Length: 134
View 1 (cartoon, rainbow, N blue to C red):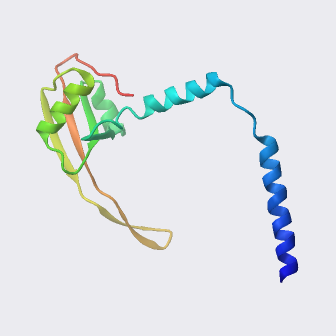
View 2 (view 1 turned 180 degrees about the vertical axis):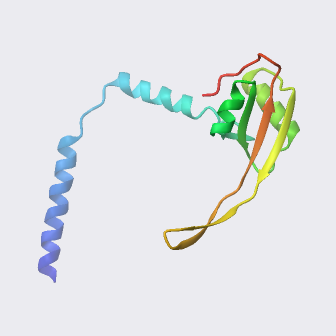
């Protein structure tokens, strides 16, 4: 069996050498661009209450009417969500509804599992007032 280990180690070394040859230094400009993109994507990372916008067919249709849907932390309430929206976007919402969606049992590919539930906040703004969700 030790004989096969030698071949295995040799293949791993060849694979490692190929990866090293393919590595190319990335210019500084593209590194900065990538970090900028990461900062944009993690706009909700600084938020303690709002996790991310909830993007679904119904919520995108509501966006046209000035209604936005966000996934929020399980311990969030309307007051916390209102303060966080005001801090992030600088606009005060008119009304906020909170919906607690329970977890669901699923059966996929012969296995039982649980689809995790979450809490979402439906945020209403004045007519014509819009915010930019990134």
